[in-house]
Length: 507
Image (cartoon, rainbow, N blue to C red):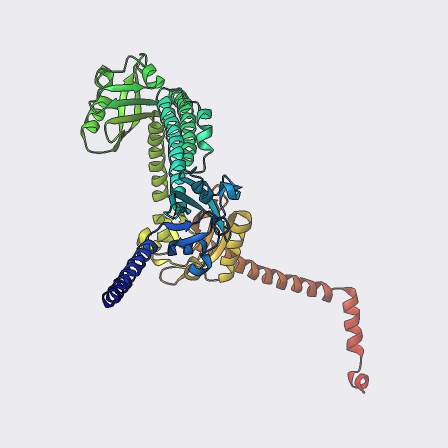
């Protein structure tokens, strides 16, 4: 009996150890199962939860004790394609009926929808109980990524098709078969490719417009160059004609095409021009000009030739302007200027030009001599204010300037003026205002005469006239007295006065 009791005590002791070890193992299993990402739930035939891991607790947002015993359809209502599953369609009952395959379901909680991948296993215990073990994985993010990847692939495929359209459009531009409407769909996109298509279409249309404008401009330029009354030519870096305008060709009785490909020196009558162009093309200069004379049809002509390099110096354009008339005009002007200078320098009257600032611009030797200066240069340098330095009476200066301002001229204007040594002379001036095309005063010019001698003669004559007048007046009075005293009336009055007793008269 004692042995039996000892055996039972030993068996109880071993059972307690086994149970303890089993609990430790179960605890470790629960910790291990609670740390995995998948939620695990063990349900009986009624769908009630007999065991679950902590991941399942977090999934349904319930405490562990509140979960146990609840049915899975209650804690985990599911839907597919937006349709809520009835209890019979719930994975837990599908597993228990052994008619289940791993599928994805929609789970809504607190306004958020998650995608759950659920796998199930049917387990029949030794006691005959039928159970279902569900493994639940949240694949929301994965599904979102897969959908995003699918969408991205579709977008990329569409994008590549649109890119092919742009590439095809670029090729059509080279073939001159571009049709802008073929890119309308691509241009409607609001991404970078659409922006590129819009820019490309606009650029091509602008290019086409520019090509058309360029062609028109070329035609216009050719028309202008042919209409220009000047000789224009283009030569390459080797001094060979690329082209000429009609005027140049007609000067040498040739066609424009006859010049192309010819060396600039192929014309015998064109030696000076050929020499100028040859030296210019070989020089590092980008621009140059010269005047040359040419015999054209026995007519001696002068040309101003201006040359300019372009295309980084690989080509040159030259323009020749006929300046024969200008050269003749310059020669005539030179002669006229020499004649004017001779008159100006040798005139007996003083001649001047003065500025509105009251300074002399030019004076001739006669004027400087009138004022006592040794030379015109000395007078121009010395007189810095005409009114203050020359006019004795400043009001005469004001009067003179008023005449020029209101009438534009002053004729026979006389005033007293200071000389270099401060002596005073009388001046007579005839002057006028010179203005530009806008009516602005440029300068004043005029002729000056020293009339001091004339003034002295006039003063002397005036004095003599006064004296003569006085003498005439005295002789007249004497005659009048003689006539009065010789009259009968005066004689009678004198007789009566002689007979009067003055003492009695006054008493």
